[in-house]
Length: 267
Ligand SMILES: Nc1ncnc2c1ncn2[C@@H]1O[C@H](COP(=O)(O)OP(=O)(O)OP(=O)(O)O)[C@@H](O)[C@H]1O
Ligand SMILES: Cc1ncsc1CCO
Ligand SMILES: [Mg+2]
Image 1: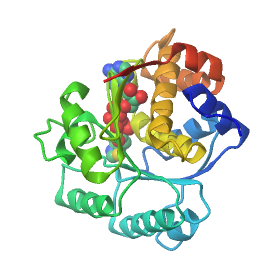
Image 2 (image 1 turned 120 degrees about the vertical axis):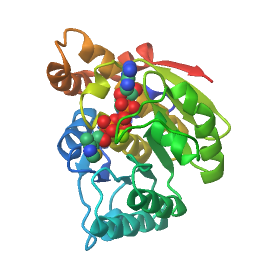
Image 3 (image 1 turned 90 degrees about the horizontal axis):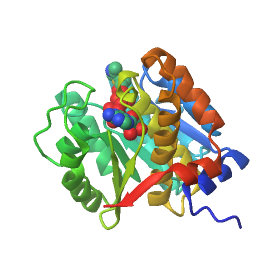
């Protein structure tokens, strides 16, 4: 069996056997997230209807759930899919977009957390609020530094028995015991909408490729974004050209470059 111990090895394995990733994501993110998965080498399927989301989760290799543009019917599909993924032994990722903003979102996220996501990926404001802290987030945008969310992430990981990823200028990943920081990316990334949502889908793709190493898979997805983001920023004139350069950089990134350039340090 091929060893999938480094981010590069995981990226290579994903491209050799593209996983089918069911993404229940928001209207803003659907197109860019699907393109991000294709550029990285996975097969995205944006399937969210309550009538079929559970059935589809039974055939997908992993599932991602994002509450960005939530409505009541979507919640039924999310819950059915989360239950089906868990029954099938497949990993699933929760992205609790702006869950602190309204009671509707708060309740939906509480119910999804009770279904035990394998991985939780959010920005710093979202993770601080999930751990009961005072978050300064405004709508879907973070206004807190990642360093401030590290304690919250550790607490949440232990309580949920999940891997927690906090993204921002320097990302942080923990499973409650181990923790790492991942440097890289670009300040243009939060200027392009739904890149975080797309990253959540990519975390799902890596988790499908390496379900035996969920912590490593999460780190690999974040490192992939960090290096593609750095590459795309070279020569980008602003968020518009960054956006298409980012897709090209993801598609062009190879395993060796990823392993040579990834800046992952113990935290
Ligand atoms: N200031 C920054 N410098 C470098 N990289 C960044 C910066 N801010 C965010 N990123 C990167 O952008 C990507 C998306 O993370 P971000 O925290 O912006 O997600 P988000 O707030 O959930 O985004 P969205 O809700 O728009 O989808 C991650 O790869 C992260 O590392
Ligand atoms: C802008 C926006 N609004 C709801 S979801 C979303 C995408 C970024 O989270
Ligand atoms: Mg987000």
